[in-house]
Image (tube, rainbow, N blue to C red; front, side, top):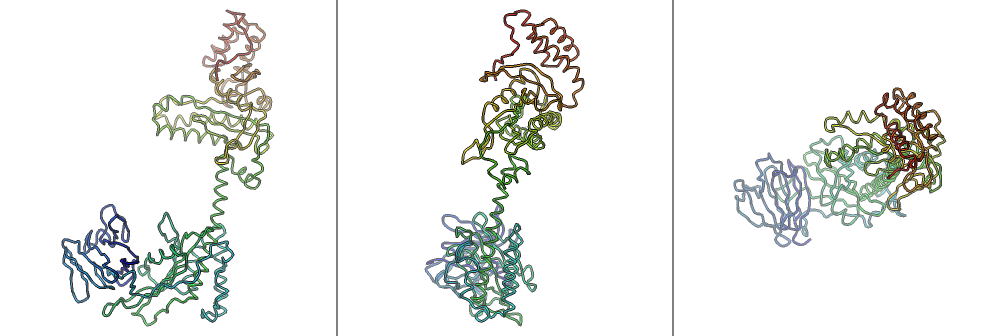
Amino acid sequence: MAGGLRLRIYESNRPVFSDEFSGPIELGRQDKGEQGPFTLTSYPDKSRLVIATHNEDSISRKHAILEAVGDTRVRIKNLSETVPIRISDDGVLLAPGASSEFGLPWVVTLGRKTIRVLSATQEGEKPLQTLNAATAPPGSATGIPPRLHSLNLATEGGMSPESVIRWLQTMMGVLQAAAGTTEFLERAANAVVDLVGLDTGRVMLRDGGNWKADALATAPRIAPDQVSPPSRYVLRKILEERRTFWEVPEVSLSEGQSLDRVSAVVAAPILNRAGEVIGALYGDRNFESSFSKISGPITMAEAMLVEVLAGGVAAGLERVKQEKKAIKAEVLFEQFFTPELAKQLLANPDMLQSRESEVTLLFCDIRGFSRISEQLGPGSTMEWVNDVMGALSDCVTAHDGVLVDYIGDELLAMWGAPKSQPDHALLACRAAVDMLDVIPVLNERWKSVIANGFDLGIGINTGPAQVGNTGTKRKFKYGPLGNSVNLASRLQGASKYFKTRILVSGNTYNQIGCKIPARKLGKIRVINIQEAVEIYELSSLNQPNWEPLRKGYEQALEAFEAENFSQAARTLGILQLEYPNDGPSLILLSRVVNAKVDPASYDAIWTLPSK
């Protein structure tokens, strides 16, 4: 690009950064609030590159600004107030506040950092080399193994037949390791080192627009502090052109200015099925002039092998992506269903098709919600509701129920679909009884911030319903529709009038028999449902003196329905003395008294005034 600069930065003769800039670039050490070295920040008038940590006092926080002057020169200004800049090996310094121009390429020293400055158009190093065609995405007709048909590895690549077989075996290992694990990333990085013969291998993946090394492998001869950071320039070229690139820089910067070690790199794009660059397989090889053995340049054959490995990584990532989608779908199902049922639904999605089924519906409402939410405020209320609903939901799933919906402070659950459950009514009732048992636990947990605690009201009904996706194509919501659902909701509301916790319809009671303690409360009419409903109260299994209370109440109810009001009143009066807090007994006594005072108003079926 005209008027641009390329910077290659070294520390202790080791390359640590490389990138290209189209405008002025400011260099300095880490300032307060900035991330560590080689963090790049773009501003409207310049870019800022952090090249040192905050404690490297030899570099100022704002030390130098570099700007291209045409295609062959650079202007350097010393922004520091105290520290000079060395601009040549013969001791020439650029004083604080001064500026000057130099021809390119040029070398500048800031503290322990040596910076090679090149023009973007007049590169002072061997240009990037690339394979002719863009890399093919996984699953395409020209996908894995790409290019192998055009390359004789034994002749052009200098590989023995044994090496070719070993390479292919490693390639298969990378693909096989992609089955449900990310081990293939480490295998691919190691293959770059072991088979291609590079010093380091990396799998670089894109994360929110940034490159991140998800796997790193090094040759045994490479110490941890000898691992150079990847070239941003090479990675950007991969993003722009979607090709495999390799680079062999000059060993000498200019006459009299040499570095002991510079690196050659090779990088191949990792693509998704849409052909977008999601990562790169990156490797480098060091030229070590201080050692007797000098590694050779990267060849086209080696670049092709890296590209094939990158294709294997791309295929592996696509496979992992599909597995994650399946897991995500399973997790989505498990938000509504038990894990066992979720697995069945994944194997047989037809189970979710709409159909009429006999089901048992449970509505559970938190009593005291308005008082508590006013006391806690929005944030703490959300935390408390999540805790309560989580505990109630556990009761549902523990008895193989389906969590249909949360409606404010109310929960809706269902049994009998999508999987047939012959004992669906009993399962729902057992879940409701378990819900009563979690109330004291939750109230104890929150007693420091909620003075009087909360209670529950539960309604349960069994009957036919149309069951399926009651949501839309945009938002899945599996649940029931029909009059049976409405009645379950009305029974939850009716529990307030009877001052009790669990009401079930006669349909439900007839299916559970005597397996859970219950008493008949009478018949009611609810809003928008014409037919009278016989209702029963369920009790927790450990409620003391339940049987005498049940027997006494049902005797009083029988007398009331036979219009023997005096007998009903005597029985209820005794119950009130023994069980003063029993809501149904108090309600029935008031109805008995009203019937005695105004016989014309008597109706054995109680019509509730509202929901």
